[in-house]
Length: 239
Image 1 (cartoon, helix red, strand yellow):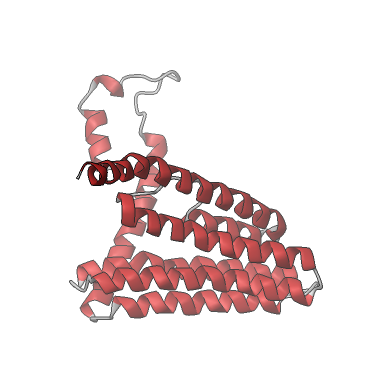
Image 2 (cartoon, one colour):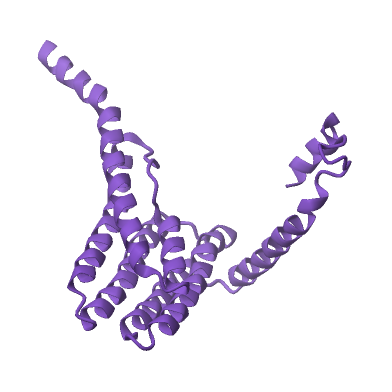
């Protein structure tokens, strides 16, 4: 943000805009201040956790525990309490995002970054995703809504496949971040569906976009490996 501000004050872009105002950044002051305040608060929390020498893997695991609570709320809901229980579950999932934010930061701040930590974080994230959808599976099965049981199961599998195709592709080509829906987008969609009690259309959206993402990553990896695979084959024939 400060670099942007410096660019604005150091150039001729600070002149009057179309409305005649000469202070083009004033309407963004409160958002910048809010962002800085959140950043300062988060940094303070990270510093305290780092000083306490809390293992980042513990924070990662606590994220799974919190997501399991959200899964319980999904599964415990019924026709009468659905809107209320789903809203609680959405708020709990928002709270679980705190652990996603701080575990990696704490690891870096306390010099506890390890390869196992990255592996553990990835595995726990998969369990956290699955737990949310498992709670929805219980909810729909208790309500005898077979179609949505199948849809939720498909969403659970497709969400895992989005992560798997990226991990497997990156073992071959280094980077594969193409596609529409990764974990942050899925979490936002699930939170929206929970808070506004519109989970059915959210499941449809995740199912379609996750499938497109998987297909996109398969095609992307194929195009990146096609020429590479051809070189050793020709070399082997020549030898």
